[in-house]
Length: 371
Image 1 (tube, helix red, strand yellow):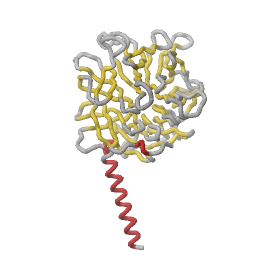
Image 2 (cartoon, rainbow, N blue to C red; image 1 turned 180 degrees about the vertical axis):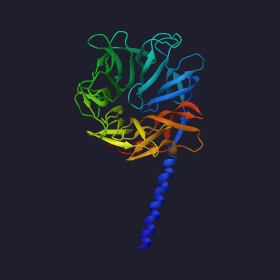
Image 3 (spheres, one colour; image 1 turned 60 degrees about the vertical axis):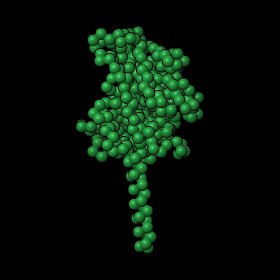
Image 4 (tube, rainbow, N blue to C red; image 1 turned 90 degrees about the vertical axis):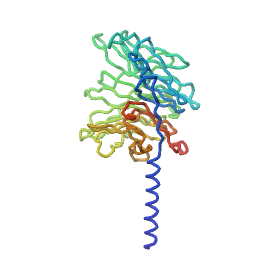
């Protein structure tokens, strides 16, 4: 019996050592660079590993522009008007999923000092940035996410019934038209943050949109919009508000919700249930901002001093800084998106400078079966 026990202990120690070693060396990290300036951010990644975000250009007084990072190079996507600012927020396409598309926002008039005029959502494809407009004259709009069919969600300014106030409403842009998705019951504003293709949901209307909306109580709640209806996802037990940031092909949603203790925690909403993903040690707050079709979740944990990017996989939350080579010079602050190969993008500090990054797994996630 003693020999068996010793063997089991030795086996467990080996397993734990191997697991710890693999996690410590799970990713290589790549600095995405800039458009000639000093700083960049990264916000989304598609299935081919192409990334979008915002980067400063070489001229001192130039505003940052949206970019497409592909095959190790960063391409300037321009803006809707000369001498103005743009940012890429969502990307799709690649690996058999059609052409690359990017959405985000751009100012529509040249900037005069700090005033750059209204901002509009855009859709970039085939080398061209297209203005998606708004639902109200003079209003603003932003595109947050785009799917492989070129459908976009985000928010747009909408006048109230008395034409005295401009509220933000989530929209779905499809086949050249922008549709107002409205709000949850009693709410006045909403924001669309994530969209899927709908191909695996076996539903008549296909596409699903997630985001958050104000409610009659005055608090924001996460939602899923499908079949022309906006469903309230509620909050974690005892919480008052929740925000949703991303959705995968199976309709699983991630975001952040307040808790009964007054902090806010990352959540995963799946099959009608909102699960608390917790936080890293010494971090009271967390937010989940990306999810792939395997259910891997990325996001950030926060305290009053620092932010740390995390990966949540198979029921465990990992600090991503412990999964890259030591001495890399990186502080991984936010992880915003993850694709089905396990590639992660986000924003951190590299040797003290804000930069977008790409984490490439040493072992691909794709060998595992999807749920």
